[in-house]
Length: 116
Length: 106
Image 1: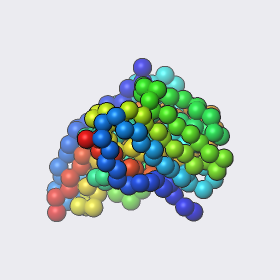
Image 2: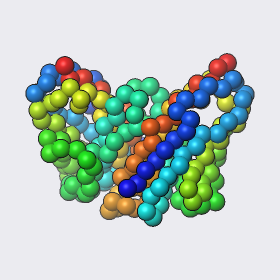
Image 3: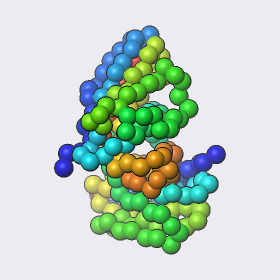
Image 4: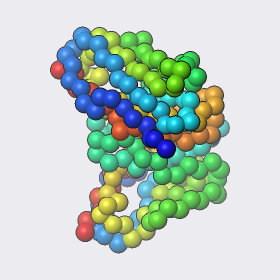
């Protein structure tokens, strides 16, 4: 069974640029969530996708957007990067039901983004 | 608003010195409390899910318990390889605490 994978592992961008991060969910999982983790903090929920539809969103501005594909892989896009966007971006997948169900999420290794 | 508070923020233990980490939560209708272990620069690794007060789960030197207000992660006779940040989270969209950084000194 393949776990959650993310790419790239590290990324350096400059302020104002755009970035796309990618995530492949664990086999059999149709729900993907994205989190932002600043240094020394717990992960903060960005949004979740279930069967290609956004299924819940945290307190992040619209310049954070995402997609989920028919194979349940996902992308996180961030436009107009700001210095505070520097963080570890984590993707997690779950077997999938609507938001609120009791399921365990399994995390990928993350993408470390540095905005200069 | 759902909240998760973990304590202590950091804990240093001698190898073999047992202790407990605390996760206090306020959430409307708990749908699961989750414990994860995170090594520096890595994604969180799943440890346990607890659903109802009184439930307990064990894995090697770790034991997680749940009450109506808090969860404890008990570490028995820890080893240096148990050093990590331990995160708890509640609900489906996972409101995480800030974690407890555990260092076990050989």
